[in-house]
Length: 441
Image (tube, rainbow, N blue to C red):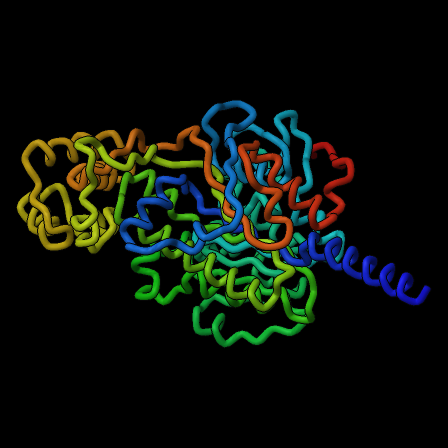
């Protein structure tokens, strides 16, 4: 009888262990904006080693179309990834009919879970905003900033302090949202050294804004005195895990997308590596906290990156010799002085521009409001036999890499709206219940 009783108790304990192990306590969702599978693979080739994200035990892929287009923008994609619903391009946290829809971070906060968002763009940009804001247009940045301050977020970090202050900023209503944030319990930091020295306790709330607009590109950010994405993530994990509370954290590597828009193979590589270094920070946290689910994905692919433009080859050694982004180059050189421009290209990229290539760069500059960076980026990619199909987003599916308890749920090909629902089911956030909605004002 005693043996039978002991066996029953053992079975119950094992069953309970398995049951609770399947439900993560913490969730870290990492979004590489514009990052398709080819961006990941090319970065691996250039690094000469396997990226941390590709070591995931479970791999899936998601479709990214929006409610009104086969090719999504970041607002609609961010809304799908945060709410589980499709909306039109440009809309954040609102359905096409104008209905406000809660996001997974809001549901988590209602359940007593700490929440955070981090980006290398303005923190009011489309993807991070999708986890706390509700606006008809992604360009309502001042209103988005208000939503952040009024939100239940525990942590928010990125750039864009211009939308939080009236003097020297973009606000015309006189509101000082940094002061209002402090009144709501946020500790506000605007310098890297203050962030690194910050010591949280279990009641801490942190708002870090480190640039007037977007943060500087990863390749120049340390020189600009701004924190890198892995540093912001590490500090956010300190804040969120203080007191051993459960948490939900969204981290965006925002500028992979911008380098894709510019067809800049060097910039894309460096932004993807910074993002992967952030994945490493998450994995290191999960080693000590195995009840942490880590999802790595993208909102959409940008640029239509092709691994070879022909000839069954890519010139990886050539790209490794590039030392600057095309955006940096356009800030230092001008099409008004072609001789100096050619010297600069030789110095920073190790290649010679032909007259046809110069003519192409000039022609692209006339089409673009961003200067001659797009044309230069594509020329430098072509020289290394790397192809791009567009300077915009594409409808390509994007990868999902999953680690930790419940990671096996993220395999296969599915819609981007399924991803937050899978997270909600695993964490048992109230989002798995019927979605509540309220009309727009």
